[in-house]
Length: 121
Image: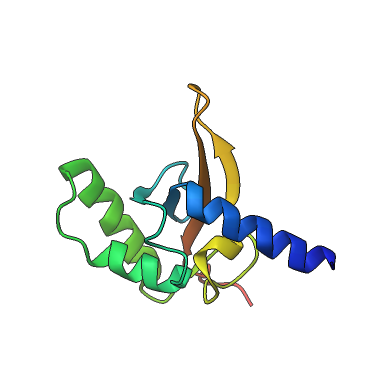
């Protein structure tokens, strides 16, 4: 079995067991909006779709609404990116395995809302 196939098989197995945490971070901020997807609810969805649904939510707290406004400002002329680049593929493809202080494992994807700098070439 090829390494790529083995990695995909492991990702599928993890997706069946672990929640997926997606965080959209505005610009260079340290924290962003977080959305948690339970196993069985995200495997066949693109990261773009999960982010779009997340940004369309209206039940955020006041603090989260401020972060959402920062994200929307960045997206005015900007775009969503991960360390791997764009966000068009399956959400699980961008996820990394993480663990809480209590030892609970989950999959995590950080997405940045980045607006190109003005004035440069």
